Every structure is written in C-alpha cells, then in structure tokens.
Length: 498
Image (cartoon, rainbow, N blue to C red):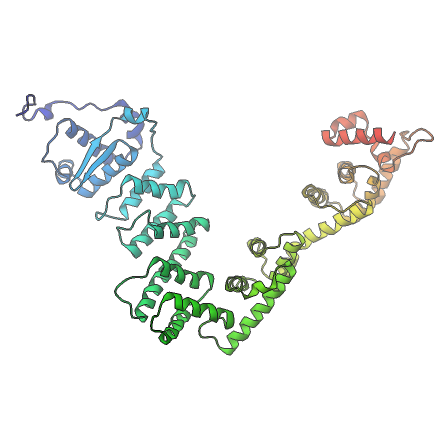
C-alpha cells in the first residue's frame, strides 16, 4: 500500500493546473475536441488510473475512439504529448514551458492539417511515428514538393506496397527522388509519374508470371530495368511482353536477357515487333538525329546509342524535325552544344506557344532583327561586333518604349562614331530626341544643327568631334538632369576631344 494517496472521488472535487502558455500559445489554434482531450488527459495525468483505456476516455468525453487518438496525434506533433506505448496506447505529457526552453514554438496550422491528413491515410491500421512524420514534412519543406503531392505519393505507396511500407526504404527514396528531380509542382505532374510507376510494377509482375516465376514479386533491379524500358527507351507494355517470347530460346529466362533483346531491337528496328514500316521510321529518325548532331558539332556515332535515339523520338512527339533543327542551330550559335540545351530551348519555345517552324520564326523575328541591327551598328562604327545583354535592352527600349524606327537609329548612329562607348552615347542622343518628341531624321538633324549654331563650336584649329557637337547642347542645367553614368561619360569625352 502506498504511503500517501487521495480518498476516492478526490479528483472530482480538486482542480487541475493548466499552464498559461498552453492557454495563450497552443489553445487558440487548436480544435475544440483537441482541447477537450488535452484537458481530460492532463487531469488523468494528475490522478492516474491504470485501468483507464482509450475507450474509457472516449466514453467520458462523448467522443469516438479514433477522434481521441487523432487529438493525441495533434498534441504529439505540436510537442506537448509524447507517445510511450502503442498497444495499448499510452501518452506522457510535457510541460509547455519545457518545450519553450528547448526552442520549440507553435506549429503553423497548415502543418497540423497536413499531418492529420497524413495520419488519416492509414486509418486505424497504422500509427505513424515522429521520424516518419518528419520525413514526410522534409519532402515538403526541404525538397519543395506541394503537400497535396506528398499525400498523393503516400496514397500510391499504400496502394502498391501496403500500409506498412517504409518511409526510408530504397524504393521509396528512388520514387520520391524522381519526383523531386522532376520538380513536380502539380497533382497532374505527380499522377503521371505515379501512374508510370504503377505500370512498371504491374508490368514487371506480369512479366515474371510469363516467365514462369510466380512465387515472388519483382526485385529492385528488375523494377529498375523495366522502368528503363518504359521511361528511357519508350517501349510499350505490349512490346516488352513480345520480347519475352524470345526468352523461350534459353533455359534461364531473365530480365537481363530481355534487356539484351530490347537493346538489340532498339538499335535495329525500334521495337520487339518491328514491321518494315517501323524499320523505315527508325532509319529516318537516325538520319534526322545525325543531322542535329552535325549542326551541334557532336560525334555522329552517338546516334547509335539507344538513349539518344529515344531522346530524339520524345522530341519528335511534340516538335517538327525542322523546329528541332532550328533549336540546334540556335544552341550552336550560342555555343551551347548539348542535347540538353536543345531540349531546354524547345521547352522554352513550347511554353511561349511556338511548336511549328512558322511559329518559332515569328517568335524569333524580333530577336533576329535586334541581332541584325546590333551587328550593323558595330560595323558602322568600325568596331568589333559584340552582343551584350545591355545592348539588346537598349535596342528594345529605343524601338519598343520610345518607338524609333530602325532607319532613324541607323541615320543618327554615325554621330557616335568617335566616342569610346558608342552604344551608351547613342542612347543619350535618342533619349534627348525622345524627350523633345522628335521621330524623324530631318527633325533630329535640325535639332543638331540648331545647337551647333548656338556657339558651341571648338576654337579654330581644334579637332571637332562630330558626335560631341550634338551633345554640346547639354548645358550644366541639362547635365544635372542626365543620369550620372551619362553625364560622367559626356565629360570624359569632352576632355578627350580637347
């Protein structure tokens, strides 16, 4: 018998201390049922009853057993309750002040909802531990997968592996890693990867059955091979099963043997059941790919690699051959000579609604025109051609924001021939014309001549910079209105001319 104790029924007449931290920091964002369960458990912590069960607590609160367990999962995630037993469930309370001193803080409600949704996927058949919850939260917080995508992934794992799947198994890491690498941002993108994964698992099991192996499921290596056939080599399930027929020629059928068959078929005919028409299509694919590699200056022998052929096929599913070649030419001009860069350019064009040669040509015309204008300017100034980003930005401003024609730009460009930075100098000239609303060469010329007559000519015998004649109209007041970079440049050019 214990030395001390309470008289029976003492707990009904006594009071239970509730931390003010709980009331101010945790209670406001909690559901009402969660608060009820917390307070009831807190009271029972002060007055223990070893015979008390979850069912008893649920009956005392007029709640469902699962709702009581859900409430404790909430407080466990928040950090105010620690689970110390699963069968039967047992919990230990932590003081809110302890959590505060250990660096804890109130959890964002969106995480509470996420964790509750995570638990609900498993129902009463499995209770997730803190490490598993942390892993799921890490997929969201660290790897930037949307919460709804992670929940869909967990549902997929339950459907394919059962509710006892491991959050840290190699297979789980590989599949979630594929979604992370693909930067999945929507449910549709996630569903595409998960559907393919399900097709891989179902197909691999069916293939084992066709090979007479029914006592086990596919191994990790077998799944990886099947995934490669579908994802990288773009084989259909029917083509893979057709290749399985070839295994009758050996006494030891295996996925490795089928891999050899499919590789050979890919190199020779494109599929395990290639028709004459498919063979001709493969030959055309190789010829087109060889031309793209030639544009990029890459090794033409690379076209024999199955992965390269599969890449070109995947590009052809979306883009015309001419568009792929245009992307290769663009990359070659930019000295970005890889197939990955070609694909990146194609994806950018596609995002802007350009898939055909005509659409791409229309999309690129402004850029090509800017390139031609910039090349002409540098040739006119007798300088080495350069293509800096800021030069393109200036041309865009002159033509689009200020509305100057190419003819006017080229007409006044000679006035900047002798300065050190002709592009910046021409930008200053056009800026002044824009301020005065002058849009024709005649108007620009008249403006220039007017300021030349204003008495700003150099003393006799001094070489006059024709470009500076125009800018010498900039009095000190006008100079103060100029950007600092333009004013400094003008002063340097004036000193140099003197």
